Length: 133
Image: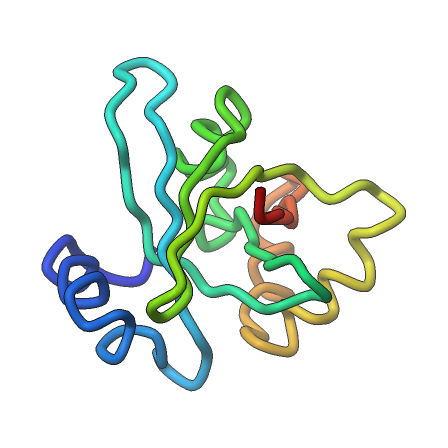
């Protein structure tokens, strides 16, 4: 979503010193397992801390189709997550309808374009909760 493979590698090599701060917000690395191939895929995504958990938004810029990383974690919710130098195993889940309004506010404060993305699609844009295991 944010940038290419070389940026992911730089983030990993520098423990996020390069790549964590991005266009006025913060980025983490999410590694999912491909639902068809079983291959590991690492995607840089805007995140926010939420209590002990982390939040992501599966927006794909307001596209009608969900991002591949979201489809992958629906099939296999066990993921790897990296914030700066902190790399850990986690479980990803979609926020419940009760949780989502407050979580959405947190994420839209970090990246106001999320509110604009909802106007581009009829798709319900999920908030994803990353829980350390």
